[in-house]
Length: 278
Image (cartoon, rainbow, N blue to C red; front, top):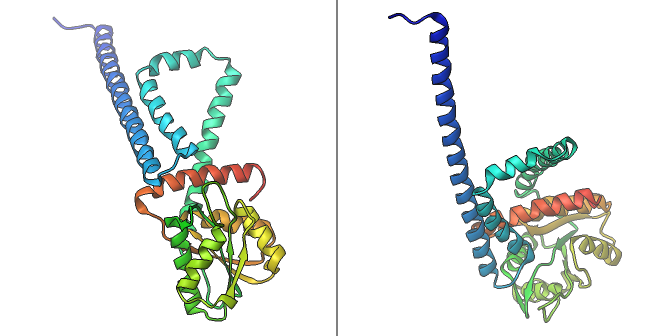
């Protein structure tokens, strides 16, 4: 018996609804699996980074906790969505704007951070500024050693260039970061007459402010030596502080923990941007 036209339409609609429901179930299942895997990876990776650094770090700790939170929330995704839909429209709108801003800022600034990881230095600079980094007791950390050796290679190729070593003394450091770098350069036959110290600063901005006050660097041709992921922020800060001719010389970071450095750097860049430091 032939079906009437409306009955055919109804059957087609029912089949489409069934397919839509199956797709929605699979999509939800796939989303949950992806969230769980992402949460597990985030927790394990940043735990690994913390262990490799051999010191407690609040940023790594918070990101590891975020991984655990993502795993927990993946099992409660539907109730959370239902709850969010009950929020006032204004709050829902603000939440969407917040996440859109995060995504846009990441899309804009992360390529800038990555692009500036390349070498932009020029030969014959007046000064090299080496930015300080963690010292364990009296021993330079791997990032600080990497920065020091990058400076040594440049100074050997440019014998007329002087160097300003920066960095004060923080918790767990028996000597200043500048002194740790000075010892490294002297061990590698850099003439002590070419070495100048700035040993009071506690952060990147102070590195530049104190160095300029001591040695009048803002009008000089300056090479900034720092970790590759840090070049963009360092150059931005220097230019904000009226350094006129600055170039970056990146030191290579450990590739196994570079993603952690990049995420931290993105967060720091956004903080500096919001507070007007760059």
